[in-house]
Image 1: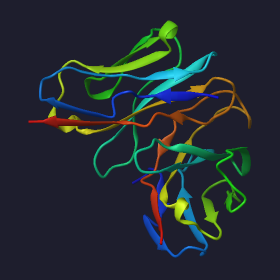
Image 2 (image 1 turned 45 degrees about the vertical axis):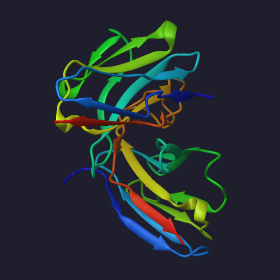
Image 3 (image 1 turned 120 degrees about the horizontal axis):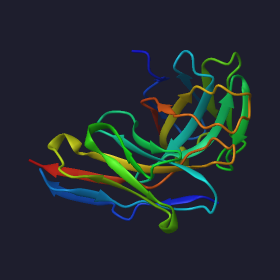
Image 4 (image 1 turned 30 degrees about the vertical axis):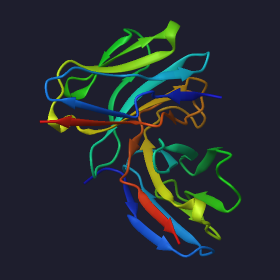
Length: 120
Length: 114
């Protein structure tokens, strides 16, 4: 399967613990996105990378959240001191941009299966 | 700020019925518009997209959508639904400003009874 993959698919944790999710984009894709989806809502944008540069961050991304893409390939999303309100599906998407970083060109985003986080 | 409204949260249809799902967005500038579908147990997949040109766009599986700029709408249609169309449908917009984020609506759950 050459699509976007995410691990783990499910994570149950206790409030206050730290969790880390991984996303592997489609291999040639240079843009990577994180979204969060809660029950009954559509996905909400969190952040986006072009290669290793983090170019956009949502106000939803509090200081407890940090995302990295150190080598411009896979990405990790870490949530520190989890709260029950963090329970959600965390989605990753990737796309191929042919322009420079910050280029205004928009490219189709391909989504992964998501990581479902439950904070007890 | 951009926002997307999907007024139909749940739709139930019989097979062969026609489908129209509403989508309205709020943004005054140029936009890129999308419909994504999520089948039970599967991830989000792109159904169709509009960037520019002909406002009537055709997607996969017989779906089409019409962009009406004056109404800020991008409604999804299918003349005859099948049981396999049971899924959740999300409308999304990207403001053509260089920012890459997609803004999604809350989704419409479609149930097609055989």
